[in-house]
Image 1 (spheres, rainbow, N blue to C red):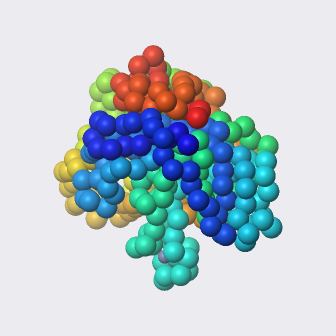
Image 2: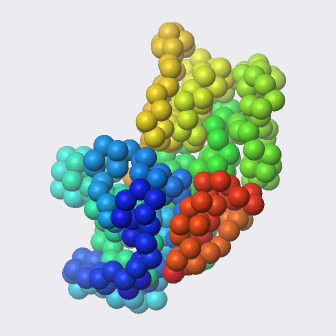
Length: 345
Ligand SMILES: [Zn+2]
Ligand SMILES: [Zn+2]
């Protein structure tokens, strides 16, 4: 089959690779849509933490935001999946035996795979073989929309960890794809007010169209003052961080109310934040790392089915899988107002 394989930094090849060989617990899926993520840009550049730390090694097939159609179910998977089913696969695949897996934290399993990142080949290919335990049916959604269940989960995880309720004012840092999903998830959780913080006209506009109540633009000066005005001096009770640059931390510190919870989803590609811990301690600010979306996939599928999370302002480009390298450049440079690029094998 044809696939995109990364052979090293800046070395992506569209080439023939061996067909996947599904085992009895696996399902063979024909990939229908796969989206480019900021993480794919970092994998392409060689700056992503798993590459720089040696956890992941080239060559591999990237792509963790994918959906597809079942071609064949292995012997043990036939009861749950049949040819023609529309499916999405989770990103993290745990061993299902260790202490963390048994507690539901399979995304932290020491022996885990991550699709398109660690061990498990990704969806930038014609076919993918996937373990049935981490596969979900998505009937009723388009393949394109289904490819966005994964990034929706990245927004649901911090919304859950920061325990957003209708009593909370929420700030979303970063109007990129994850931030734009986070705005919608915070609304679905009933947040009293959702403020999107960023520095891009088109993306902040998309955020307002997708349900943000207000925006704060760091190009227009002090974000703390803008949030103070938007909240009538209350500041925010929860923050979903989706930036991954050190400049985000002083902004977060300037907008939190005492007792606030901060869910961090960004990867900083090695950038180190200067953090003054004193205000964190005396205001009892919780800072929570959020990886993946363990156990949250059915909820994400439901959010899409109910129309509470949409992709229409987020998908800006559609290309062929063979155009991967160009799609990465479009994502990186945000050419033509790019937010999300979807590839079709
Ligand atoms: Zn991603
Ligand atoms: Zn495990």
